[in-house]
Length: 228
Ligand SMILES: [Zn+2]
Image (spheres, rainbow, N blue to C red):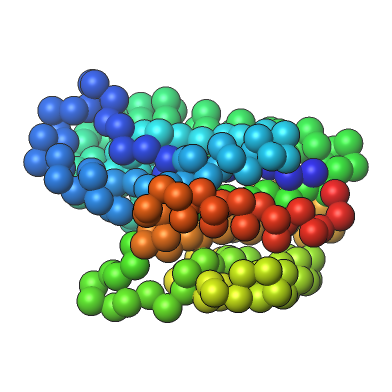
């Protein structure tokens, strides 16, 4: 059983908050505002697997759905100055519904004995603060969870066989154990029934459209080699 999430699918700011985001217009269009390509890719994967798909098109600059509530980067420099009650409202309206829907779906499935692969789809900027990222595709997981480790080892092998032209790396450009949604979900569900893998795609690969389409198909094929 697979479920797909996309935390950073869009760069929209809800109308009631737009006044504070006037100075963020340029930044919203960049990787800081969203994960270009991720929403489409999540759509593509969930269609292929007929999987539940949870996504957000609200910018992470309002609130970052891939952070814990106590993380200092939950709110951005634009949303941090909001008074406490406004922040509480943003959490109730934008953060909790998304996170709780995913958690409830997992709870239902796992309660019925299902073993679930949660694929969290993200994309990353090719260069950050002058550092060029080596990975084309990153598979992020917790090395202490034997199921996730084994899954990513096999997945990496599939990539090497099927798409040797891409540099697929484990726990790069980020670590799977960093504060993120799967990291939280690992505290809720045992490794025997929950695997939370973040799939990170280098944004240099999402253009031109034709090769991006091809890559999406190739990634799908690496996943189709796994038993259901
Ligand atoms: Zn992301």
